[in-house]
Amino acid sequence: MGFGKNANVKVLSTSLNEDYSNNDKQNDEIKPLLEELQQLHEKRDTADIQLKAISEQVALLQGNRLDLLVKSDNDSLSGMKNTLDFIKTNLIATLNEQNKRQKEVDQIDVQIRQCQDKIDKRKALTNSPNSAIIVKVYSDKDMTLPVTLSYVTNKAGWVPVYDVRVADINSPLQLTYKADIYQNSGLNWQNIDFSLSTSNPSDGITAPDLLPWHIDIYSEKGGFFFSKHDDISAKVSRSVRPDDNALTNTLGINTRFEVKLPYTIKSNTQSNILTLQNKEVEAKYHYIAIPKLDSSVYLQAQITDWDKLDLLPGKSTVFFDGNYIGESFITTKDLKETLDISLGKDKNIFISRNRNINETSKPSLFGNDISQKYAYTIDVKNAKSLPIDIIVYDQLPNIINKTVVLDDAKYDDANYDKKTGTLMWQFKLNPNENKNLNLSFKLTYPKDKVSDIIGL
Image (spheres, rainbow, N blue to C red):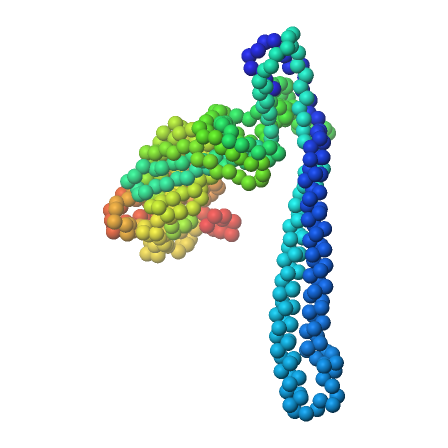
């Protein structure tokens, strides 16, 4: 609540009260609906009587009471023919009339349900009071001032979403920022100017207290002595726990998007997708493949200056060459030099990984040890009309137990990460070019540990 910069007015207190004054107006709106409902019920009763009368005629003509129409002395053939003609002609007309009356009854039933729904909705509004804000102010003189009211609600929020569009691997990446906005505050926001921010007004404004951090030795009598430093995180979570529906930026940077055009957001559970801005982003494109796990080849866009794009974690819809590819997720949680965005599979690049039977050996016994050579061949083919850059990943096993020995490893010109065991081949493939990658290694382990080896 504010009165601008006028220093002669001070707000002493504010309170929120329930206001039932609008219920009389709601009751006045219900009365004509109740009258309409009564008229529909009367109309329905009349139509039902007419339908029952027609049904009696049908039953009569169908023979349930045929003895009332056909006299006992009318046994001649011509008399029976005249009777059947009479029944046929009148039964058709009566059945058509019955069908017509049934449709009228069904239509009235629909009108009754619609009217009853309107009444129920009006009654629900009547039973729900409005809220009135009571403000006590102090001023040393009479004056008329404009009043500005602002409020914080935890029933509104937004999450970022993106459209990622790439025409081809020689074109820049088109990135569309969007906001999925929702609000269920109870008030419709009509033609408002607003901004979207990653800051959260629900966060606490008081710094947490740092409590003593105790370390002790385990005692069989007393059990474990739990460190009191856990209270730090507990206290922080109580004071700055974000609202479940709020978006938090893991980098601790508050980003703000100003919406230039007035916008209407109704109070309901539906989301509203709003386009914030479009950016053309320079990207490098390459293909990646992990044939040990998947025979598909994936296209990736690599963005270097991603930290200048004000990106927030969010779902992305990917389009390539004008076609919908699928959905991905943009995240900046793991800080890297580049931001990689997956653009889907390319069916014009083929890759396979097979065991090289000629190079693979059977287990051989040398004293107390068993030795065996493993060999694989990876075949890559570019069936596209353009040259491509591709990265192929594979791996050598990481040896945990020192009784197992890895040696004689050969992996052509791949880069080898000893810490993870990852092998990476990075190369260019021209149109319709094939390339073979070879991988082999030898494992030696004690013969009495054959059944205990894990991972082969």
